[in-house]
Image (tube, rainbow, N blue to C red; front, top):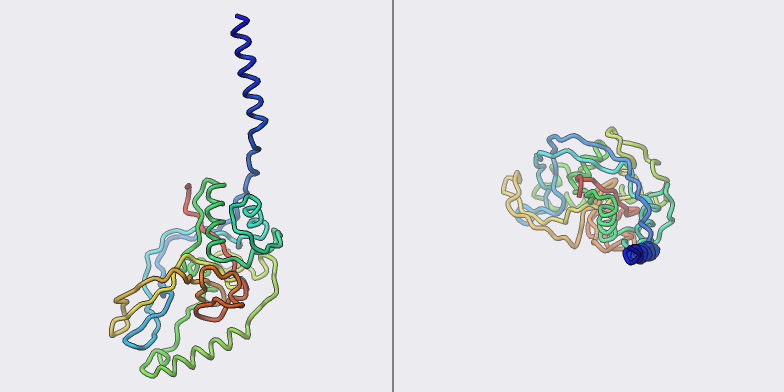
Length: 269
């Protein structure tokens, strides 16, 4: 009987020692506020460059049977991203660590790493939105990068002039001051800061396409995923490893003021 008690004592001591050596569990991660968007029909213009013959023209809008969407109300904050960095799960970037400001100077890989870390820490599946999903969430604040009919005609100079005039107007609207989350208000769906001065990464790759002779359908399409669509006041295309598009790396369109992101939730991982 004494021998058995000794075994229990030894086993108990070993367990206690193991518990002392076991690292503390990581602190809990708070779930962000989200906005639910109902399923419905969406008319979406694909992101990229499309040609009819040798002319660059607008891609036609396609009807999409879009499913329900749950998206973060605010962009991922500097404090949230700093948490991921302290656990060595996200690449190191310049960060204020402030909860009340969006994390900027983010490239596509940074945003994806955060989504993977956050999914693992919450037991849910979080990811970057597609370009189409972002536009659904943006509602009335989303922009259409198409041109008027004459810029899609036989004279290519008209498209060049229209593009130049648009770029001049957009560059004049730059805002290089960091603002707190919520500064730009909510859209009609309740999503905050859409089309403010922080552009957001999407999962959508830059697309090259060919249109039918009547320009009504896309007959050929290919993705180049070294460049991704980013969305804000206007759609732009940025090389995936770029954190500050104004210093270079904007593959097409006027460079964003800042690069940040928000995530959508698909459900349990």
